Image 1 (cartoon, protein in one colour):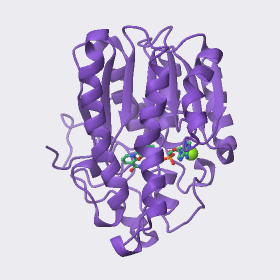
Image 2 (tube, helix red, strand yellow):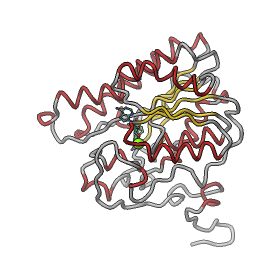
Image 3 (spheres, rainbow, N blue to C red):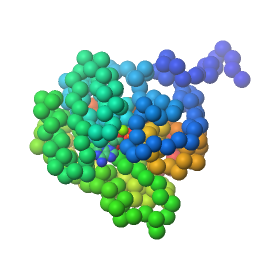
Image 4 (cartoon, rainbow, N blue to C red):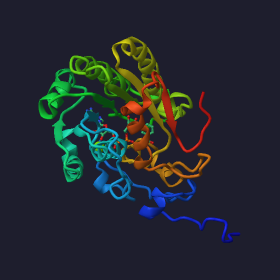
Length: 310
Ligand code: NAD
Ligand code: MG
């Protein structure tokens, strides 16, 4: 029942997303069709197309003059973060696999549309030399660096430990956590006091799915890495925090991140009853990147549609 004192039900147009909205209906509760792409996949071929904030994210200058590197910034959550950072006034470098050039070019276009500098650094984070030299390349393009978002990730669903190969376990660890050590270590040469490091972990760190054993284990490790490094770097004025997304509609899910038959129900078991969109993550990263969160250190911010977390 609605009356004049009750807000009308909201849809998901741009004004609704920005103004007073019911989080249950603010974004569509979609049933994604079964689909498959080869890893790493492309947002431009994802159905439905994910909302990375192209139409809705509005900046308020909270990252004016800042310089950010976002790994996996071509698509999904990383793309939403790159767009939001640019709209908050930051110059942004993104890194991604060479096969993702089409997605990356679109994010570059969106960053430049804000009058900001976009730097594209394609490469493979499992390549030790590439991950070690990546921050320097971002600095060369941006003229400095004060925000690092370690967001690249690999997720392949495998039903049982017997079927999970050593090769997959090692590759998942390499991309998700070992590269994070390498990239962050190299970035420290450049990050001044006041910088912020934000790592993408997952609700899987607390609530691991049996079919994502290797992936969930890396996400637990990312939480530990975040808290330990936060203690190390806090006295130097560099804050380290993490964001733990829940089920977010991204190409990761259709590149064997989920069993195909699970896609139509993806995200429906959260308290809000729907999957999240990448844009819904962006404000968490902006908050942790900006000096508004000056007293937030070693924290994991959950953005998961409602699920029990420690
Ligand atoms: P995505 O596929 O859009 O982003 C992942 C990115 O990782 C890719 O775009 C790719 O550029 C990068 N990547 C993967 N392997 C790489 C490699 N070897 N070298 C360099 N880059 C590589 O999917 P997303 O969902 O936006 O994922 C972003 C992060 O969010 C990941 O860390 C993921 O684990 C995490 N996460 C996602 C969800 C979700 O439901 N989508 C939930 C929790 C956490
Ligand atoms: Mg991608």
